[in-house]
Length: 335
Image (cartoon, rainbow, N blue to C red; front, side, top):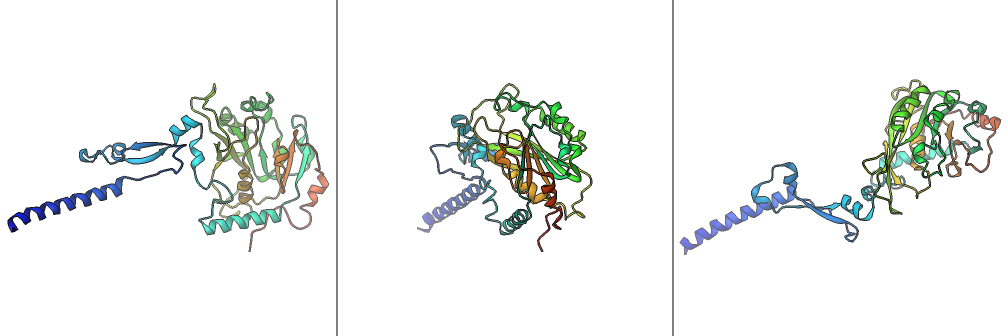
């Protein structure tokens, strides 16, 4: 009896060791990422050791189950970035109480000390910026770029036209500029224009476009070999600003340089509202100007100028009075 039981116990021990080894391998190498919406998402099965190049011959059946968002994009035109979580400004910091409190405090301060919205209907091609009789801490420019022509009815400004804007006449020192440059020629020309206006490029904010509410098109266009899903906004600085000594003017590292937001339907050139939050949290200057704005861009704390604006309320003396009542040109820090 003992002679028969001994080999069985030894065999059972070997089997247990093998099972424990397999369990450890499974926990270490196999991860499951399963989308609950199986109807709209394809699955791919990838061997992780195949990816790393060191697959054991005896472990060929262990697989990773992953959502294949790229194949889903090909099938449905639903972009992979649609599935990134917590991209909204409203709920982004729900799981990070300190960051949520910081962003809420900064938004509250900015709102409390914002000047009333002012706007002006003007053709910037002929308008003299010097007539504003003001210097601005922040200038945001969203020009009708050549690449926007198919969506804007064929109307656009050339890069030379944009460069001829007399930004130096209205830029305070120090100040910041934010220039939307699209995703084509502007990647080079935008930097040249910032240098012409005496700004140094310091950041490149990227807008990654989602299409959760409409079906996109799998088209590259004539000037692309990959499907374009992004645009760039260059940030420039004029003068000297140091984070160690100029905390009264800038607050660094509050936001990131990536915006993930919905792309408007074909024909609209509207940019993400999140850029305003990034600007207002970063720079404490209260004098803010937006060029090429539309009615939807009118916002407290800003002067908005554009040919598409349907009315005007800008008055030089009234605007200057907002900073002459002792409140100054900076948003004060919280106690």
